[in-house]
Length: 282
Image 1 (tube, rainbow, N blue to C red):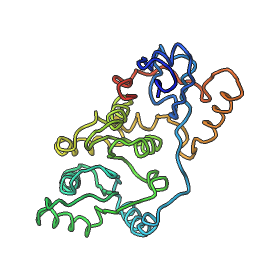
Image 2: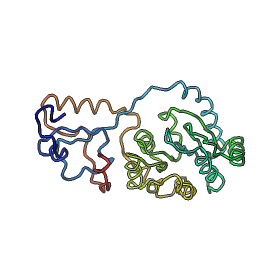
Image 3: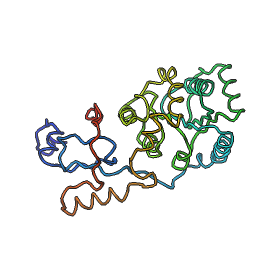
Image 4: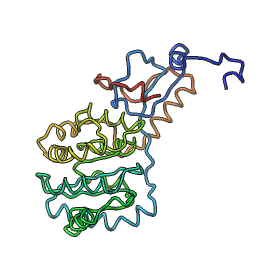
């Protein structure tokens, strides 16, 4: 593309953005990570953008089962943990082993909701399926293919997510302990590091390692007096009901009108820089 416009074929993009003060808008709340000291005013963090009010037909179909499960768990005095790998290639057997370990050994009364569809891959033996069926019959475990996270997340006590922006930020905005596990690709490592650096959960862990530590996470995350719970309750990553559109449109309007380059959202107090963020920008 550069050669087609008669420009040098090789250029170091990031320093060029700095020297030419090219406007860069990162749709993340400023408290997500500390803006590096060498990023100029032309690089601004605004706010996350979420689509609200859109619900798939599959999520709508699952709503009655979800309502019944959540209501029954609350009435039984059980804490609720939401677990999802989204579309990540994790075997259903691995998920069921983690669920079984937490439900059988967690020190707190617990119900686990798994959202998503996972391949069986012929790896779920009969005893594991039987254990999962018994937990479902007891009202402590439910699998659904899809759900409206915007309405479901505020009712949960802790989260195990795969580390995508949407699920992770949704969990953090609801101020509950959160950890990231799965295959840990691309930005999943970044969001796992955000959870750990904020202090709301342990460092991100590959799924086959998480099987060994899932009970420890559940015990700590569901303890109302734990450090995870205390820190999560104080998090500020923006209003969970704000779709982020106004903040981002206002910033672009400011850029296009020739105004000074200032972040729309007030810059928060400095936080420790997340190691490796530049690499995640790729």
